[in-house]
Image (cartoon, rainbow, N blue to C red; front, side):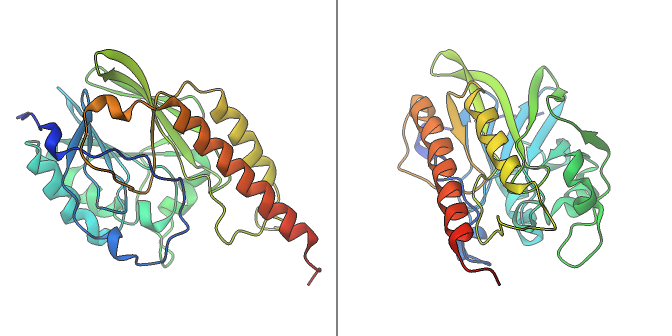
Length: 270
């Protein structure tokens, strides 16, 4: 595979708050954003508002998140701008089964032949052909702590449910600023508009969120990356290293959940 170096002038860190609480069809979801190398063989190939991550290996590419179907040409162009071939995407992963992160999965599979790997609890939504669902065949069903490996790169899938039942946080190690670092691609932790009290469709939602926060707090995290893009001016790769921000994201998300739970618990029963 052809590969080119991408200068730090094109780089921007992706350390925004973990949230899906953005307006539907938000303009920045489909707004092009320059692709860039985060560190090692890890790249950003998403739009301004939706994050896609690319892991380049000698045996092909791993792509995380397919986003909106309308974003597939944007993702393809970003991968090719970095000097890779879109057809070399061998494995497709997602963070969770929400349309802004998975609607393009079937199209990417059709264009590249990539194997689609999804956490078990999100598989029914991925294979569903209902309106708003991708209808994409899942080639490998994942479980907590399963690993995905290609060309010497390894990602570990951690089940962090709440936002969806199969919400998946991805962890990998790569060299950042001359040292081996733990990169953690956090699944969304927010509960925008979610019913936390008497949720018959998801009765364990609060317990799942709380378990996820505990699990995430125990995962080594040097470089936190999120499902939605939030960018700051270009800087050296060392700027991505921010363990304190990783802890802050988890803590603030936990506080927000408990506050919303308290609000809903105090509200008059309908």
